[in-house]
Image 1: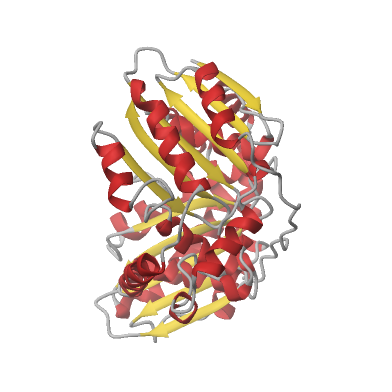
Image 2: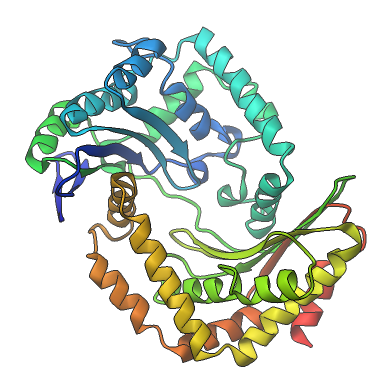
Length: 420
């Protein structure tokens, strides 16, 4: 498999990876315009814009867009995160030019029809309502808000209902004009693809775009804090966030190995202690997330209201115990799990294309997989133990609780338990 990169004269970047033997391909455009690039009054507009991408262009109706891809057996979708918005398709290799044309069309020629805006506004409001009715979804938004208080990175991606109610055509067009410049776009394609053909098509579709003004974003600052909402639910939901390295930090691999050992699978410490030995929950896990300038290791669990105090306290105890006796065997098992998960996850062209865009946006190059594996292998047991000690005692913390949580200890008490 060969990765090739090309940059158009206007700054638009292209990355491809040919995967021999594949009859399909994944192609998309990743735009550095997500939730953290919104001003307060714009909160939710990046996600709204993603929805509107499929609602019609100067050349195609919403039905035309869907039929163009589905007539050839393909699939098209989009997503919004806090740092990017992505528009992508999976098609057979001979239909890559068509997929690129459709994606180019929805990015370059949206019409933002007022009637379609109203229809999609209703869809998004339903999505917000669904999220609010899903405790193990909404609790992560509340945790994010506490971790990054009064910052773009702390705001919900969907946006508040009152903002979504008021977005109009000018708001959408203005956000595109401000953020959808070629220098902030990456076209990534993987599978049965031809690099030279894709570069030529990309030049035709995007080569005439004019670079925009450079944009500064507010640096992230993990502040921490607590959110608690009492509600009559079957389960008490617990989410603890600890400040972690950003994805350019040399400590990122130690953080990821640590999170796998702590709560990344059935053999992990939290799963074994909290679920298998004590039966306090059905679901418990830890994961290490990262942004350009910050990161957060998150521990989530759901339990009954009368057991939430035990669960919270034992979780803190496990953080402390990990700092004291995490052994070489479990660190190596976590390392192998991490590598296997990464490599198995990259067996599809969609995952490969996603990786191309992500690596290019972070490093302005695409590291070879062997280089990434080498960095994972270079993490020593002492590196992980040192990171575990930092997480147990020093890392800033945020806490979100939802449901029958009156008996749950507050963040101050949990912090005292960490320090004891």
